[in-house]
Image 1: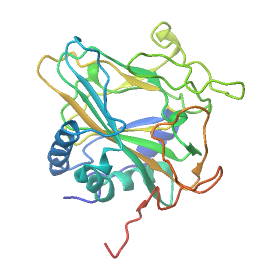
Image 2: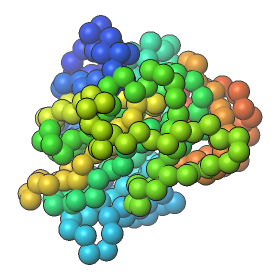
Image 3: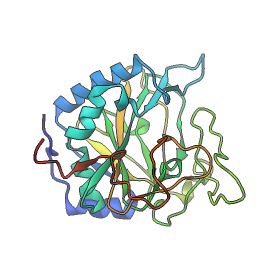
Length: 279
């Protein structure tokens, strides 16, 4: 399988990512990777870990499944993280000399799933400080624009951090205390005229990459026939350091021996790019 992207990440792509906080990259992954990940997703759904969740409620139409860090029990997900084009793509977009793997996530919305993924940022959940952090969202199936990932253009640029959201209930207040500086997430659905929401139709091999501070979400899967399966991987660049945030973090990397300000270029967050020439 191709270890490098089958298309080139252009300067225009980099400029778009830096300006908008999100970019859609076309035909980056060979079909073999997608077929490989399809099997990995089924393995993840057939087992469970500490972050395995059914996000939809009992009796809801469809089914919404999510899982973090499944690469610890699903070897195919780990292999994808360490051998696919994802790390190279991330390092290129981040202008980073290296790309370290933080964690993976699996997202499945079966046909007719109504439950949407609430508007949120990713970085407030993470033990990560810095600006060189991105998430690569790779769908396994073609995705119609109206059910695709949504990103609020330019929402990463201020550096503001918003309350993490519980997906299942849409509630905030995660980690609120007197020292907390998180803001309430903007009400994007009530005031759509104030925001420019980016959304793309995706074919197999396309991916979306967005910044850790980009506000994003996703509608349900209104398709009556097509599943919406995706794997995301989170990548850390040169300037990222460890931080212990208030409240619960997801994923919570326990017993890591790190203190605030320590580099995340370490065994807990292995360097994947540039590739080890000995491998």
